[in-house]
Image 1: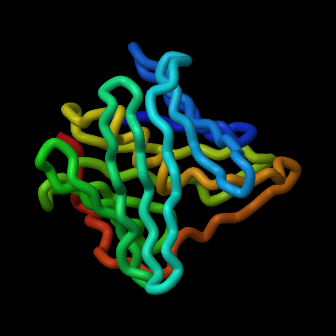
Image 2 (image 1 turned 60 degrees about the vertical axis):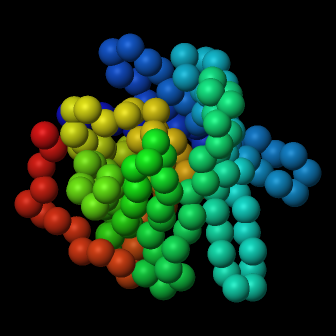
Length: 177
């Protein structure tokens, strides 16, 4: 299965045949949070939690539909990756050298995505390749957390070289099922 996410004017979009997703930034004083809308209804709120000593970061995701909470932990300072447990399944997200990121469920790869190298005037694309049975709500949430940063400068052209370090090497032979 393949999806395309677009980032236009600080809003992340994904549409498939049934659902329209959108992620937007909100400010509350010094705190910023992200809100995920599914068919224009609030689906989840994402908060960043940082503990500077020792450096630990996590994202708290509150789903409005099910009143459930999910915590995505940032691991590895120089070779970063993320992990969380959902429905008794362990998910791990590995950013690779460059602009690719792989997603694993119980140590089995289920998806990877790649964002554009060149972003023009706050517009960019994220190309997603995933297994056909993937939970698209979880996938969109992960991309919203990991690869969607706040940037108010929409009048520039930026080049994103991606990551330098990686905790796990990208599997060039992987293909979706």
